[in-house]
Image 1 (spheres, rainbow, N blue to C red):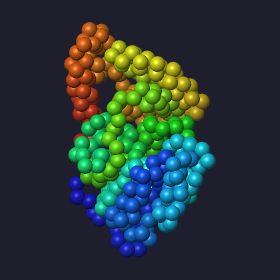
Image 2: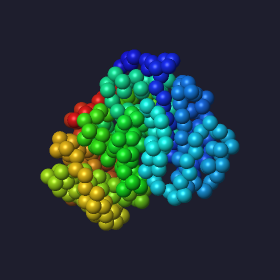
Image 3: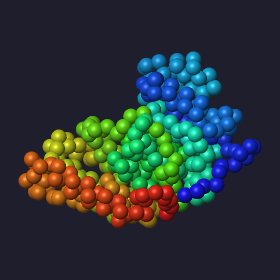
Image 4: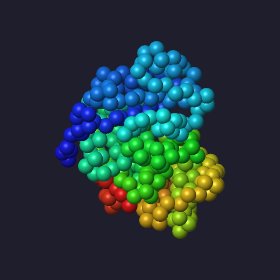
Length: 341
């Protein structure tokens, strides 16, 4: 899709780059250097804020000594993803480019993202994400679609960054993207995905890690209990628990994640703020974590019978997952896509 260029000169919007850092001093140095030297955006229309989430590796000293133009905000404790909220409060930009400390954009990426946002009246623009030197994009590893985004890089309008209250501090890490998009859609605002705008994440998606999987499941339980209407919450919660049970047939250690799901549901109920019925229904039917794992698995009994042939079960699950996305092309587009409710 060809986009009209972002305006130049005095009409060029002010962009706040909000970078959250925690014990990644060297990747952060690369990030800030790329922003300074390789991002096509005038320095006088760009403010860079680094929120140091209580790093202990000299991150703050590096920023002070090497990047005097960067505004540094230090936190005494690691607050997780809600640390970005301090940059949202301090920033004065018309737009916020939200980055992990190990993720960057270069060239005309910002021009294209803002042009797309203006053309589609979008308040959130997500990008294609890849690792350095790799053609494989993250969405081929795990497709977030338009119901979430890759949290390492995203563009938010000023009103989205400020009026939605930032990222929910009830989620420490992982899963906040879906929670934020649900609240954005609840306002009637639009999410635009631009696959021709690429951000670079300095590490590839990790292999399976039980602790991360447990944290993800807890976050999804929290999101379901906080945001979904009762008629959608019950099947979504049931599907999360069923997912744990079916996955544990092949990986018995996953059964230890069940208390995390329960904890997430409990905490979400304590922070109930249901979205509109249309948004709740959209997530229950189309968000991959809230739909039945039986869509993807051959079935627990067949998986158990084929434990020595896990490749067959994985192949079947992959094919079904791809079909799930194809059947929901409005939520999981192959190219440029937009969503509002």
